[in-house]
Amino acid sequence: MSRICELTGKKMMVGNNVSHSNRKTKRKFLPNIQVKRIFVPELGEWVTLKISAAALRNINKNGAYQYIRSVEKKRGVKIL
Image 1 (cartoon, rainbow, N blue to C red):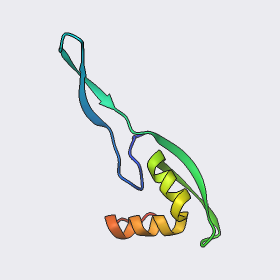
Image 2: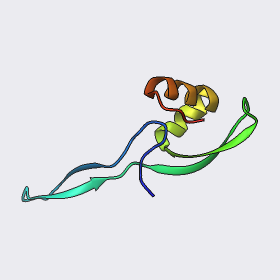
Image 3: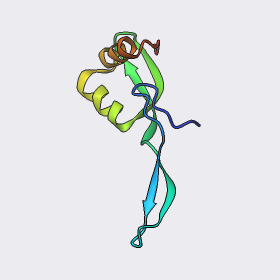
């Protein structure tokens, strides 16, 4: 499963672990991706999405249909 949010586009970042002696080793920063079924009342159906926790908060705040449409318009990608 690729760890990319379908709405925000968040994906893995690369950085360094820095020890007390200031040695640096590579590490990964993984996004908090969840697989969620969301009911969209405007469509009358359930939609399964892999979304980040930040996208889930935006859906709770703005509503699923409105947020997904705004993301489609912003990114130019068809989601629903």
